[in-house]
Image (cartoon, rainbow, N blue to C red):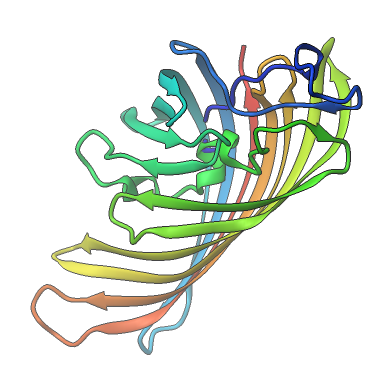
Length: 260
C-alpha cells in the first residue's frame, strides 16, 4: 500500500554478465528520488473478547503516499514517507529497506509508535516490499526465496518468509515492465496501550501480492495484495482487573498505483 518506494535498477542490457533473456530489477534508488502512490484499501476486522459475541467492522479508505529517498548505499535505503487520508492529519515517518528492497524497519511516526499504521497492512503502504526481487539477473518464470528480518516499533523482532516469482515481461504505456507474484508469512507479537490498559496480539499475517515494476528503475507501477491476519488477543485493564482473552481476524485488500 502501504504503501512505498520501489525503485531503481538497471536493465541487463548494461550488465555484461546478464543473459539476453534476463533483467535485473533490484532496489537501487538515487538519493532525492520522489515517488507518489494512490492506494484503495478495504479492511474487514472481526474481534471476539471473553464471553461477548464477535463484532465485525469494515473500513474503506483511499490513501496517498509521498516518498523521498533520504539515503541509498550498500547498507540499505532510507525513505521518508508522508501518508495522507481524507479527514485525518498527514503522518510522516521513515522506513528502512535492505539492498534487496525488503522492508527491515519502520521508525516512529512523528514521535508515535509505528502501531498507528495498524489499520493497513505493510504491503499496502510499502509496495516495494511486496515480493521484492533479489539483486541478480532474473528470467521469466524464475523463483526466489524471501527470508528477511523485520523490526517495527512496538513489536518484537520478526522474520518475514515466503517466495516470489517473476511471471512475465511486457510493455505498458510504452514502458518495459516485469510482473511479479509473491506469497509471505509474518509472525506478529505486539503490545500497545489501550484506554488505560494494554492490548497484546500474537499471531501470523499471510500476504499474497501481485506487482508490476518498470524495468528502467525498478519502481512499482501497480500492485494488488490481500493480507489475512489471525491473532490471539489479551486485553489487560488498567485497574488491575483480570485480563480478557479472545481472537482477532483481519483481512486487508488493496490496489496501489503510481501517480506521475
